[in-house]
Length: 314
Image (cartoon, rainbow, N blue to C red; front, side, top):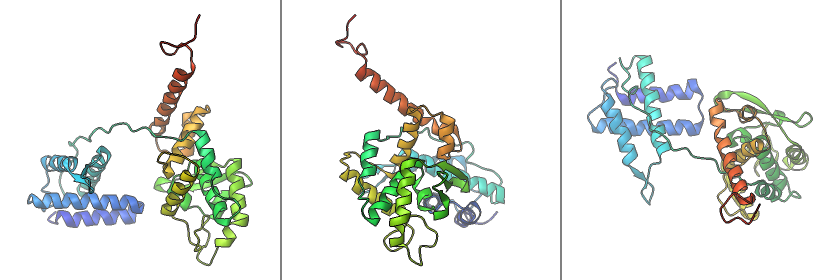
């Protein structure tokens, strides 16, 4: 009970690392938020784990909301503020559970409402140009085409793709076995284009890169190691420019496009949920809003009586 807030924060981070098995990026975000929270409390003379009250946490959230970052002093986004509060709330639940405090002051602090952010998928024609951009006559081009065909063809997160091993892909039956968030495994169908691209890479690309360090990794870099998300992001930027796509395209854009194009093609939202590996269908339903926007756009640009002044008559 008498241990400092900083000491308990370190214990909580150890707990997240060892028992929860969170990703490096998620752990880094927790560490950043909690260090800032501990420093905020210390500045106000609060050092004991049980000395925090609701007013302290509300003041911390307000300070994050009012702060800026970067050279141009941009304000923190609402999502970053919500994440900081989420980190603090989970930390105080841990304190209560482990006996570091007798009450949880974070329960009464309301989570800020986040503005709904719609995904921005690529049109099918843009995806096609992007996937055709790699030079399939070179080992690197074969790999890059397979990477993007699998990302789009199976709707994978980039962390899922770079973690794939050779045995995770069944080209004969046409599916890929994926280890998703929280260690949850799922099998996703792999379409003809992705299967052909992966087969060509395994036959004529991967053997060129393979080394003793490769082990079972599916997608390899030039040195024979497992390809990284950073490398994939750089490759995507290069190919998007080569394909003449004049908007920002991220690796997650291909996952957005996968989901949106399935729904536009008539897929059931719960099927798309399973394919994406979403724990809740509510997460998947945001893509239905995108397709509604697309339907409205097509309607207003195509129907002769959709807008006043249209040329259609009786």
